[in-house]
Image (cartoon, rainbow, N blue to C red; front, side):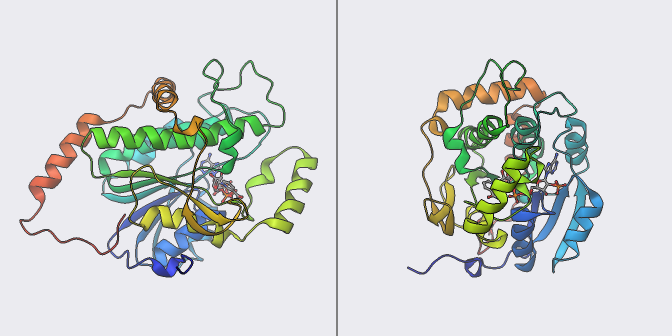
Length: 318
Ligand SMILES: NC(=O)c1ccc[n+]([C@@H]2O[C@H](COP(=O)([O-])OP(=O)(O)OC[C@H]3O[C@@H](n4cnc5c(N)ncnc54)[C@H](OP(=O)(O)O)[C@@H]3O)[C@@H](O)[C@H]2O)c1
């Protein structure tokens, strides 16, 4: 079988796609393909000017909206100002090993931005989502653990932040697992999938305060990393291929560090339904945002009653 490339994606004309952190790296490269395939792409970014610069490099229909995942007020404003259907939400934005810091709501930055921010955003937008939620995780989830006694690194030693990154990326996969379970239970046609890019040359490591980590990362990236466009392929695959809900996609070569995308495995912890449910409950308590079960049921009813007798199916799964 031939390696999967974005050429395999058929037209996305008429689809609306929101990509968080779309001004840089993997998010930008995924946005580039979605727009080139005809989707209307919303670049959800924390810096409007950087978003506009990135959008100017894309051909197709794009729009820049401000979204700071480190601030629940910004997330709520983004969702409140959104009134159309969304075919695809890509939870891509992330930070890696920044110095210990807090979001506007007091969450540790990596747990707050990478997990809680996307948790709140997804649940607030869910009544509008018609197709799929793709969340970008990492192989780093394999070393992660969820410490329910100290999710926000208030008593633990934070060190260089790698434990915080690993916890947040494990949380991304547990979120996908529990979201998929809840969607299926609610009878929703929406599915949740996850992807990881392997190792890709992006700006991700630039926020570390440790010069040693930054230099090490630069050397490793230069020697081993694939480019950001190739790193975006698992996201694109998870977003557009006909997959079961809960699927996890990553690169197929060099121990999932590089190469074309395929379905990949995950750690035991990332498959643990009890931890996933517990994390979901903790995330609801921390953010004050809940799974919109009633809204989803209503949206499904409305869609059904608005549907013409003969429905047309688009040629691309989402
Ligand atoms: N690159 C890799 O090798 C690798 C490996 C495994 C997983 N990943 C995952 O891939 C995803 C994309 O990262 P990347 O490698 O493409 O890195 P990147 O180039 O640094 O992109 C990260 C994006 O997230 C945005 N972002 C950060 N904090 C935000 C906030 N508070 N609100 C909104 N957006 C915010 C950044 O915006 P600014 O430009 O404004 O900072 C940027 O657009 C991340 O989830 C990362 O964990 C990457």
